[in-house]
Image (cartoon, rainbow over all chains, first blue to last red; front, side, top):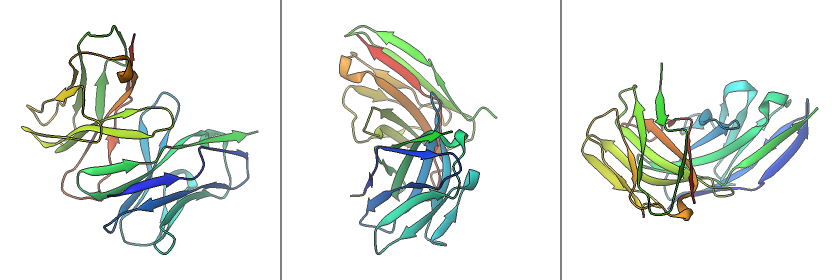
Length: 112
Length: 114
């Protein structure tokens, strides 16, 4: 069975400083990994995905994530936070066509 | 493009009442699914479908029914609502053919059961 653990339920950064949202995964198969973002009262939007190609994945809005098999991690980063990045972020593992498991989410707060 | 459309956006029910949450997608996706989102628990899969006429249970199916008579529509039925079903419900769809396919989400339906 596969699962993800998001290590921080809440992260607070100042505008212009780096963002790090941490995710560890567990999977019996070679996983596909995703990061989704959810703005208040909205659905989820895909930020980026890892599908066994390059281990460093670039997504929308300046976000990127690095797949590290030895550490079973897929942390999300951004060099410089913007106020519009304030949202909830979900790490997701997909090990077959029909089973996607979501982490509990990390709420990102960006202070002016 | 409409994408994934859910209705209603908000609903209040009394314990024991029944209702249906509607979901429609216009992307010709084979795979459709329903999730519930509860604080601190992420999204949990209720039911899913890989094509018309085919449905299966997810992680938390009890108290919910689904059917898939067309590719476009995937309604979720609550037969006898309970307060534990107070949640935000999301419908999502994707192409079936690849495990790398992303999910496309609706904007959610907020359900309160009194």
